Image (tube, rainbow, N blue to C red; front, top):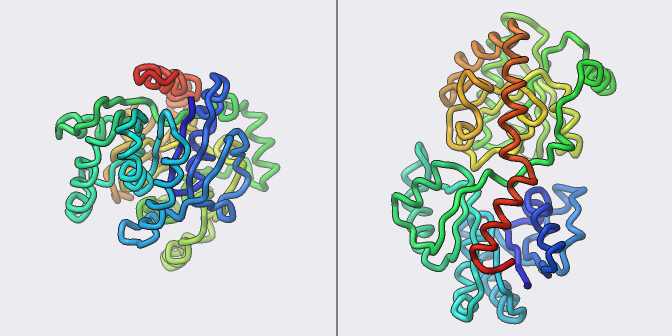
Length: 378
């Protein structure tokens, strides 16, 4: 069997899909990939298991003429390689792919689309619904299998009668819980010492690239409230800094920047999360956030906004707290509860270590293999 994986950028394949690609290789599959190479921004990702790679000039913007070039390039790749299956990811990557694969699909190629979070969702702008919803609904009829990774997207696709031949729900892309795992108090103290933090620092981490969707300014407003209680609160922000400037300026403007740690793009997230006391998310919406699954695997208590994706993982009061979007006061109150109650953190830790098993790499690969079997591919 020969499969083509497509995503807008290389890092998406490298970060999220290599374990399943390696599983396909073990089963005798030849796996190609097509994407725009963004290695300069996100280095250190191993994609060596891929048999062949094609550079395609995708743009994330639906208005960019680059996607016309991408369509032509991808159509040529598909027509020349006779794939048994084409598995597309990311919104624009999936739009271009399904249009380019229409001829191949008539010849028997299976087209699979994993939606990592529709741009139309509860609370999305009217513009998003007007632009993205009709496109996704139209292209569903050119999709043999639509895979969703959160309940809101799955229920919407079913309720709106998307015409994909099969619609599935799976538990995200999987997390390697052999790498992201709970550490002992001694190990935690050692990591903190290695990174130069004090034992009485209360470390809060949110691994995410700086952008409007990730909404870091909410965390700065929260931190301002927390610092009225103690100066021990430290906010750790690993993530691509390309668009960080206005966020950093805001943190300085409200007087919290001295307690903010801008860490840049990192390959040691497991250590950074392990040394932290709790994990946060201020996101406006998610598909199924890998950063929170990693937090669960390590056993961190979580405080997150009550939005799509976050609320698939966090059960309020069971393994963390959910707060209304942009309600920094509520977020601060929940953090103070955890700061002042180590037993509550321990209880959330135990529940997260149990709940995360559903989202392990092994479990998700098993779900994906079953889907491929249902399509007659493995």
